[in-house]
Length: 440
Image (tube, rainbow, N blue to C red; front, side, top):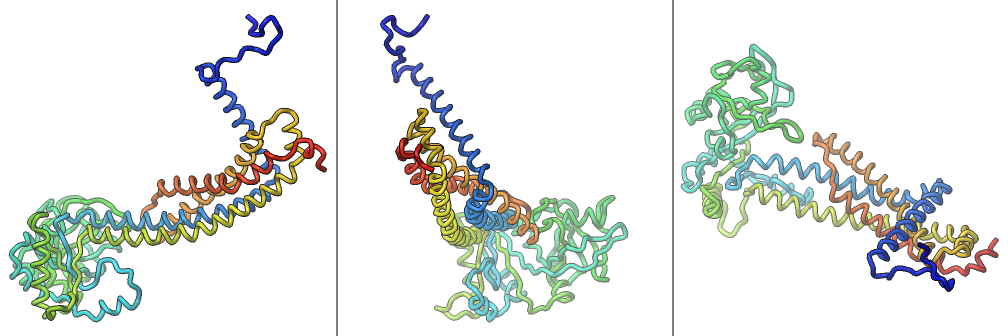
């Protein structure tokens, strides 16, 4: 049935608030949005070189954010993975801080400190009453390790340890035994192998009781650790453990600074354990009352706190620098859009003459600005992730994608497009249709 009344008046429109009215409004909005999108895309394609040069500024700004965030996320992920093996009740003591951002001057302060010696670590073991376990540790570079069945990979390491290290470092025994006090006291030629190294040296069976030759010296394998899997930068199952005294005598120096790992009884006694260890070490190392500690105490939580504080400062700095590039890019986009409005004055007049409304013209030009920014932003994100992961790979880190910063970067691009595209769009929408048609 025809909706037009018999008296020839206009068709009856459904009420604006009704479901039919809302549906029709939505259809109209979709059609206008689709038309504006394709017209904006066509305008960008028609001026390829100008569009490419304009979005280059956005690309640089987004790229600088994403490349730094990708590299830092890879580094942060590695540190978190490395520290995940430590119990929340474990803390470490060493000469140097675990993380230091103080520059060359601060490094000199730490270099002047006396080494933490094996004798001081053993004195702490005797005097401390609260810790469940105290491990003394130092690492030695790998060399050649052979068995009668295979050869170790070139990137393995050797750790000099005491029996307490196994509990403090959360190492779980799979086969055989851990180091014993007699091994340390007698500097015995024994070793415990991590799971990955075991597979390389003894692929066909248990290595317990077998011999391995490290840098020409034979060691008896007394135990094997459970696997902890791969991590960024290598494999945390790719090392061997020998008594710390054996290692210091053969591959280091008895005065070499060591690291002390301490396992507190529980979280309630954690702070008391830290205070006791600090007090004993200050006494053993003859630190005068009122002077600051000449050693560092840290845990996985404190390291992550320092890393997060540092990365936050870097993020703020990068964001500030990148905002300058994006501001310059936004000004360039506004300039190009104003030129575009001038060039297309007659086109705008024709569109207005055949029924286009101001909002249609504004939508079209704002869409062009947003598309320019989003194209530049998407290219900046892609190049930033690629370059950031190349840098991470060169540092032996695994690839990551900072999804949160990808979303933030693209959102900022949309904001830049809307902010700097609004004035040209407003100017285009408010051109006089009659004057626009006369424009040559």
